[in-house]
Length: 269
Ligand SMILES: [Ca+2]
Image (cartoon, rainbow, N blue to C red; front, side, top):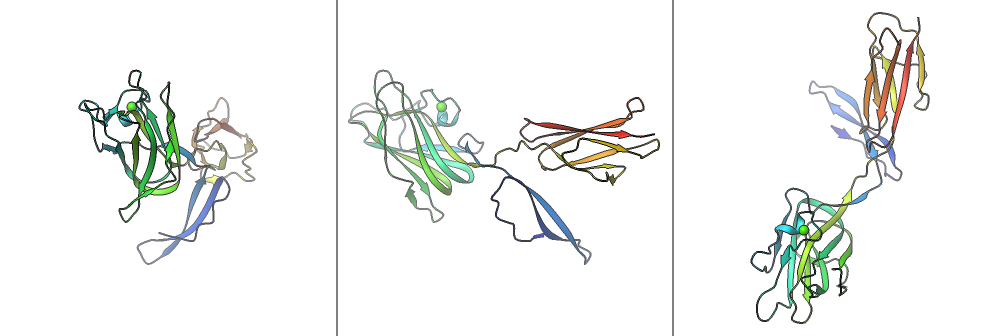
């Protein structure tokens, strides 16, 4: 397959991109791909399967396992130790794959009556050449109760590895419930419309996505109604015509499930 240059996707909706397909017998056939363009949303990708967490230091029994378990208030990671506490520690997240990272959210945990939070934190992302780069500036972490949740924006870093460098308060250990990594994810469309309806493989003449009732003069024992959704991710179901009603019903359900549109095809006698 070879696709012509795709247009710039500036608006949501369906965009067709033309191309050619090698038929493997010497012929080249025209091809079309339909692209559903939606508004991007920020999705936590640190709880995706394949994500691994690590820490520069861990109190035995309070490792990194709970940092991505979806529980935002558990006592997951701790760097407590007897005697002098660490002045800095780092939590690293290796994502399941390369993502366009837009932010990092650190949920601290209040350990008893202690402000067991970082004094400040610095988010870093790993570049393609393996070096770690600061994503924005260091962020101060509030004290007090309840435990603070700190969101650090990242300006669209294309990376697989993210880490948070924590600077401790004076001789204070640090405890964290969860580390979330926000990345661009496709949104879901609420568009529920058919692109076309066919009877026995022949498109209905004059089909208009906004018109939901059609009369057809097709006769015979077996009439099969088929339909295509305008949004390739929408779902189409067809209730075929029965002798009693003489009507077939096409239902298009939007990808996000919020909208449905039904079309009826009435078979005339
Ligand atoms: Ca957790």
